Image (tube, rainbow, N blue to C red; front, side, top):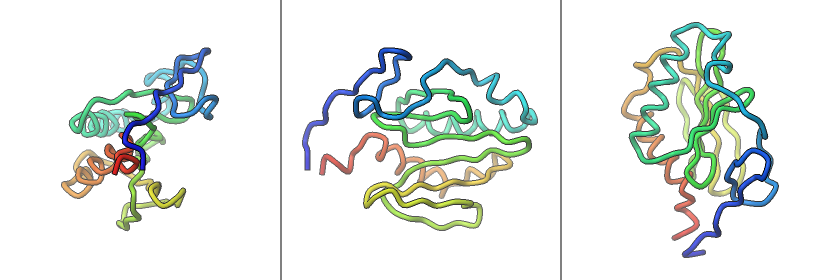
Length: 147
């Protein structure tokens, strides 16, 4: 495994920082206000709690996109998709997990397992969820490549 990682590539159009040159991304300028414009006010409140939870683990770059908000350390490791009355929260782990609020799971490779949760209220961010966010942050750092 690598001990040092290559510097991030910067998109000349929008300034996005990505692991590889020309990696897919939403090349545009989007806002949280526009993204949550059609959601109930509580959905933004739930998102702010999700954002706070992620930022409590360490420094991140938050990028609003056309249909979601993503969080990145080196790579995009978490995100949120606002809906009318709830928030879909996503993150990547190096393993598969199961949970009643898990609505989708995708396998992308041995160190990248995508998880999507339906969150309707702030109290659903329990201790277990907080632990998963910490694990996801390590995926965002690409810590698994440094072992």
